[in-house]
Length: 451
Image 1 (tube, one colour):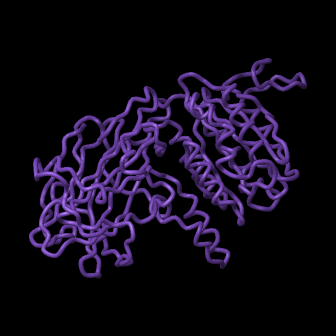
Image 2 (spheres, helix red, strand yellow; image 1 turned 90 degrees about the horizontal axis):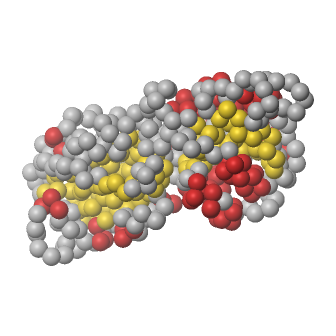
Image 3 (tube, one colour; image 1 turned 60 degrees about the vertical axis):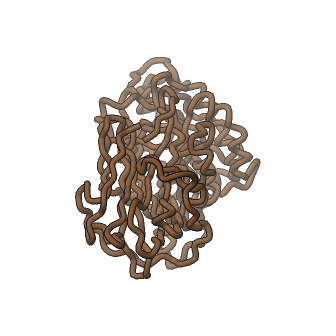
């Protein structure tokens, strides 16, 4: 566990000072003793005042005193109703889909709006750890509403490795070629995106292609992009010897929309293909490209995930969902990614596709953390009420924070995660406001770590 650091905030720096100051504290990041930015011990952040949060806080604390004596202030035990625990999340699809919907002159369906995905669509300037763990920052600002503040908990991983330093990737692309993908901005965008990414990947990376409509087919088994001609894995049957990258381009060019959407068949075939082509020492991932409008076979996320549970758990194959289309099946894709050890994004045009496939995905292929969870402990002597804004689908029972069998979030290099809390402090309160911790499994050894 890293070194903890706490301090009083000077009035005006974070606009959370009450009766002499409220301290925000947390653990160090990075596993190398790097200290968290807290209170007045870190650099000043120029943050505009935030709007007042809604006063209704059904899941906030009640102000019960902590059990037992005061003890060491750095290791105080907080009452259970002053804990907030959630799985880390780097999904951004909700924000991208909302932008697309608004650009078309429509309001997003409220069920598709997830505040944490809006916030996490913007990379924050948090300190980066030196090692493979997390940096954890806590700061905030007072709102116009008396007694209410907005507290920000920020986590960050070490930046992206140099292109030559990351492990090779074995990517299985599962591509929706159903009839609904024939509309502009769907399969055509997917094909252009895959072409861009194929040229961006390294020669020692491997790619497999699976398509699905009413049935699923492996159109290209796992193929190393740097392979030259010859009758190796993924070679064509027409007698022509071509390189691995060319085989991928040709297979993508031949994709055409077909019939209904059996997403279950696509996912299960995709994971079967990924298991057969799994590379030791590589990052093995399934990339689902779809409008997620499943209408044939198993159509529930839990039912589909049940068919691939062994592949996920035994082989550590993660899922990255890329959504397309104006009537995108947001709920299904989000559930698949959250429970399928992955994350989602949404692309609506070629500029966004280029960012995802040429910049984000190649840079974030490697994992920094598996099953990552955060827990924020609010001091009941200082905090009267609090509410986590968003993360409704990522809540974790407080007692499960250190249960490493409980699902968390998968976090890659250079990722930042932000959680916003509406916090009401007690009149005249003076002391620590909150302490934040993060726990995860090492991607290679699966050993638990905590900061």
